[in-house]
Amino acid sequence: MKTEVELKNLVKEKYTEIALQDKETNMGSCCGASCCSEEVYNIMSDDYTKLEGYNADADLGLGCGLPTEFAKIKKGNVVIDLGSGAGNDCFVARSQTGDTGNVIGIDFTEAMINKARANAEKLGYNNVEFRYGDIEKMPVTSAIADVIVSNCVLNLVPNKENVINEIYRVLKPGGHFSISDIVLVGALPEALKQTAEMYAGCVSGAIQKDEYLGFISKAGFKNITLQKEKVINIPDDILLNYISEEELSAFKESKLGIYSITVYAEKPEACCQPGCCS
Image (cartoon, rainbow, N blue to C red):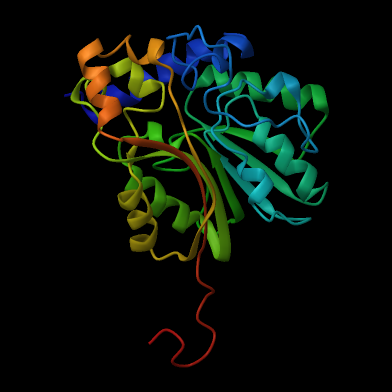
């Protein structure tokens, strides 16, 4: 069993490699994992191309949803994107905040930060910045963000509860998040749990849907809503890189569900009247 530090280093190494790959390679795999499928279609991510602010150079095909589409971003908002990659969600968010807002992308892969900064410079955006840091300990002050978004990133973090608590810290009272992620319903085969590369490719790092939503509730968020949910069908030729034919058959018979979900939740407003927090 790898430690949290080892898993983080694995993800950092994998996403450094991904930053240097083309989009087609990433989209033909499982969140950029190097196992490529003969079935030519996008396994996880949705189509960003029709969203205002979309930038092809910043789209690495790594997402599993469209959180910025559901995030209720307003003009002048401060938006933080967790695991910002090459900057795609930040640039979509910036189109919604306008010139009066601010967008901060956080990523702990230097190659991604460099790529995102280069993209922002080309676009001439002076209110979008990218900070190097761990989303379990975000390099931002408390109660700074109106909105937080993230796309297929928390599943890569070993301690998801820490990240959700950090999201609560960083949001302003009354702020909210919209996060797309991979979750499970049912037990993942042991061979996949123990496969490091599949962890970096999203699936082995995913947790049970009920546990995921439980962390959000426990942190103190309210109005928790599933904005979107879809089944993820990973092709057999990808799974067979990690499990045997017999294990694959058992995997299918288990009715295990792998889902992409987009979750919305709000941080409660600050207490403003006597007795309101009692």
